[in-house]
Image 1 (tube, rainbow over the protein chains, first blue to last red):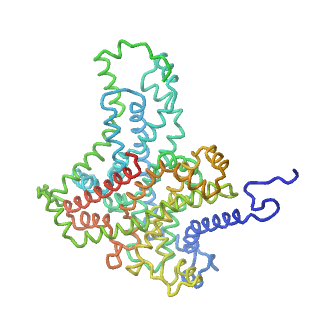
Image 2: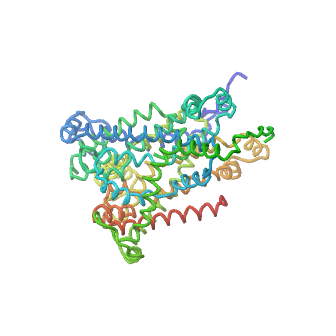
Image 3: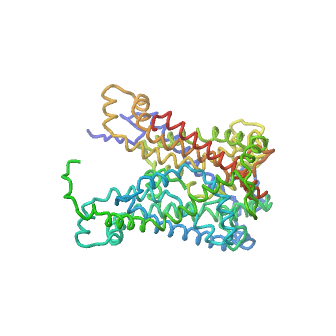
Length: 287
Length: 302
């Protein structure tokens, strides 16, 4: 045969395949619906005041300007909020990784009393709506004078059980023979974890790290409650409070704030895309 | 297993060694268990306890029995927040599940550029709710918003006052939520689709099944285990809706988007009525828990 038939082509036997064509059309439509809000946000943020409300809407300004970004960073402590978000997300991620890896090892590989009941209790918290925790956590933080600290924003998030679950599942797949061989060589339990389990689990560790980081970076309800000063306020809370301050007509500044918060996240995602896909598909883990 | 049983290790049966083994296991878990107990388990228990007390921001809790629950049942505001949230769950959860599956089916086709489409749909996942709320306030704006402009081209006139009209505000929040979070379900369904063995489709084709029959008799039944966790997680997330509402409408207009989480926020952290807010939290928990159990029973998972 001289004509090779490609499965992804819209042509079949030399004529148009309407079913395929329709699928391509739907796919393009989907990409536009999900992509356009990002572009619209960015375009609005570089439009001068005179063009923001132009009708019909224009997808590129006649005179693009970065004025609103300058104004944003001058009027609001954006850099401080970014720094706070970075510190909070880093604390949560490091604490989550360190504690979850340690906890997953015996849960996956050791027989000990209380293992089943412990797993059951830990997993059942997936079904617990977090709202029930807010009041006690808040009162506790107030009582111990920890409100408005990085500690109070970052540490409770590390109690989340998804990472433990994911790592336990992964550790179960590591061949027992490897562990037995190392034990015969006199390796301690901690040595096993450090020299065998951690190196073999790099992909799952990366997945947990990235998810924890993004979830912490975007967390909203708890940081909103527990921090009310710019010294510890994170980016999402800053944005929400800032929009709430009634700048309703300065769309340029508001869109610049949304874009400034979104662009780093988008770059982060594009660099690490495959870990996100793996993380969600193996656990149903959501940000 | 067919492997021969390992020779009995004398040490493993000695009670002293087995206690040592338990101690090692708990030592490994201690750091996580500390976080788990202090920041998750204990707060959950205290949260339930607090729902039976009168508790302000300072001072000691005072036991009041079921008084908070009684107050909630008779509170028009709370009942309204339950109704609004239920309405949101219906508006958002069904499309999140159905559209999640449809998008997964789409990007599972052998189409050029499907990885790019998948990445674009996934992108909102990494954006914070504050930014999403801001973007959609602008897109849904009545006179200069993007959505009304394109709906106008399709003949929708007069323009919809999305966030300003009590009838359309909740649908607007639902649209925003779907755009923001449908990608999670898409990826989970996509993984489910890729786990379906190819021979099942081949067998169906040999039996003369068309595309629709393949979907109906192979794909959908094989996705049942996936549904068993997509559906409860989606419904629970919808019952907890907060950030979108906080940023976009603050519960308005005329309380039409005032949700249970919004009620908890205002009761606890604006009015500092901790006991009443905890009771609302317990009710939210009972609703999501009973739904999950009911659904898993209906699907014969438990």
